[in-house]
Every structure is written in structure tokens, then in C-alpha cells.
Image 1 (cartoon, helix red, strand yellow):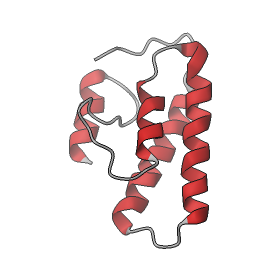
Image 2 (cartoon, one colour):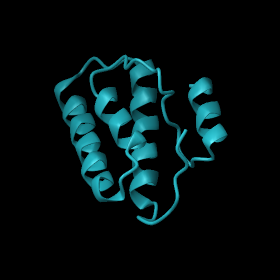
Image 3 (cartoon, one colour):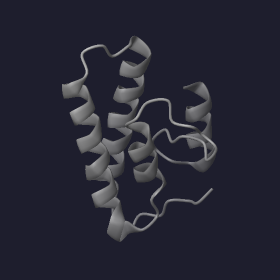
Image 4 (cartoon, helix red, strand yellow):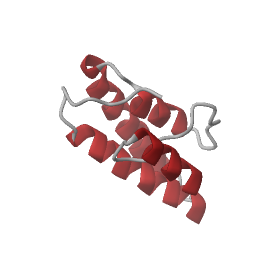
Length: 95
């Protein structure tokens, strides 16, 4: 996670984002990645809601989540919450 946080800091984003060349480890991470990398404010809410839905469905369906995945899920949920609360016109730097 340290690399991810350093990447977010370099972009001056208030939430961790995966590097561009990041390969998802868990099935829900692909939808999460799409949400945090979306730059079109008109599409952002839909992407964020899709990511929340996929993550919550994953949590309901799985009983054997590892500590590592649990940490990744919490990080993703916090990032999505912060992204959702960001103002629609607020500038987000492209990498």
C-alpha cells in the first residue's frame, strides 16, 4: 500500500489510487480502478456507485476474505467515499 499512497501524494489527490500499470489482484479492484481514474465529472458518480455496488456484493458473497484483502477493501471504500464527497467542479490532476 505504501507505493499506492506515494502515487496518490505525487498527484496531490486526497485518496489512494492504483498506479496506471497496476494489475488488479481482486475482482472488485477493476471497477474500483475505473472509478478513481475517471476524469469526466458527468460519469464519475455512476462509476463510484458501480464500485460501491461491486465491493458490497463481494463482501456479502465472500466469507473467506483475508486480512490483506480486508485492508484493501477498507482503503478502497474510504477512497470512494472521499471521491464521492469531492465537489463536481473540483480539479483533479491527470497523471
